Image 1: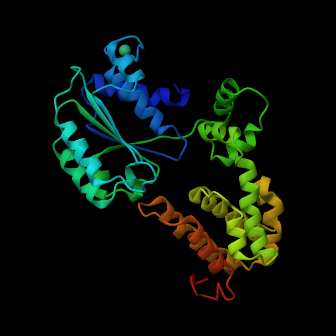
Image 2: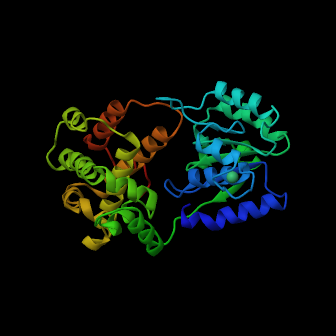
Image 3: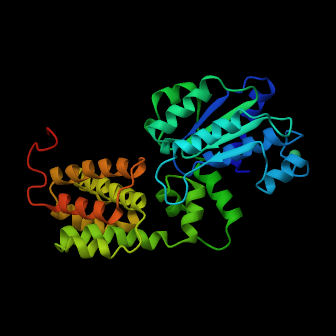
Length: 330
Ligand SMILES: [Zn+2]
């Protein structure tokens, strides 16, 4: 159990025991806050015959084997960008069947904002008249993308990150070897889960590569198609997140003229030259385009990463990309 989830879990269990746990819960909070882990832990407590996630009862053993009949997860199918209406219809049929193990029935939808409009509308019906002892857990780091009618029918729980000391203690206990946890935590918005994952893969190298693309575009007038082709396998969300952070640093550096204002210190050597060659309006213009593309990437459409990045780089670097007042009234 993640230590920073103990308090919210205890609170949820207290409400369950008092028969005041809402039928629909919406766990929100930034990526890596532990929303899915909390959903799993709550399901485990509710489906354990002792109510403790004892690990030995039939409910716990079935959960451990991934075959508990009263737990259903609705997730993105492989390569899909949307949770389809058929998946939600299956869920509704399942919800209306009697529990097999005499306890509660739990459904978890993650990421809930990936439901398309039809899926969300189908879900509304079951949210309006939930069968007794049925609990629906919606998980989302983009709750604004959910239908307002879904949001208003679920009780929100906003998870926050642990403090840095607690996060480091957890990471040091979990991961062998010396890592620069301060840097990894700061690059992961304080999330120990993301920091641990990023310590294991080549995240820091990918950041250098992504930052170099923007640097070469503006400083060396690099060719857009070759620059994007150099990114090999692109995680579009990660690429856009990095770019937004980089441009935010460029804007901060331009506003303060102080290198200490740079948050993403590991890519500072790319940020400083970009700041020297871009005008302030162009930086804001690019940030605006990046935010639009980021919403597109996080939504239920399925943009082609290569095409999207090529268009973005072309738009950001086009002559006159940020004519006075073309986007902002500064
Ligand atoms: Zn148990």
